[in-house]
Image (cartoon, rainbow, N blue to C red; front, side, top):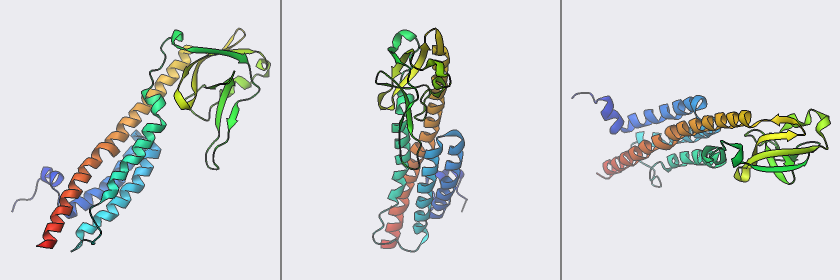
Amino acid sequence: MPKPTLKQRLTRPTAKQFVIISWVYAVVAPMIGLYIADMVTSLMALFILLLCAVISRVYLKPSLPKAFKGNKLISLIWIPLLLYTLMDSPILFTRLATDPSQLQQVSGLTPYRPMTYPSGRRTSATKYLVINKVHLHCDYSTYDGCADLFVDEGYRGQIMTAQYQKLGGFGNLAYQIEVGSDTLYDFETQYAKYRQIQQQKRREWFWSFVLFGLIPFWFIKQDRRIYKRKQASINE
């Protein structure tokens, strides 16, 4: 009997081959993800996939547990991807302003320090530059409150003017900030920075989707096939 080709092993693997592939995927995909995808998504996927690989070993036993209806846990792999998409959706899907005329403007007294919103014990506080009740970031980071503005105490109490783009619940992205005749943040530099961050986030999302969004479809399909075949052989 000829040995099965690689294509046959991938399209219709045996139970043993499926278990081996599950273990390889559980280890290799998150490791790759740490370099080309989102780190948090990859670490969450590693935990879920290792559990799935452990559960898949049930197909190597002579019989299946009565309550076992297939490895449903693999579907949870989409949760980290969904969370990542929701958390970074502002920068992923926002059309960045390409011209100052597309921005909104606010003026007010330069504050003495960023406004800090405390978070949990293990997470950093969220910081904003607040001008006339408008919350601003000078970087795509909730830990950034335009701290560079507060290095020179001479700006305190002077009128500050900021041009910004709304970014939903995340806050607002500051593109240009001026105090008197001094330009502390300029449009071209800020736009280039936001564009670079957006491209990086989109690349991470794409590879996260490939590794933990598309590939699991194959495992779900094969798991159903092997489960049905195992059930049929037990009932014979």
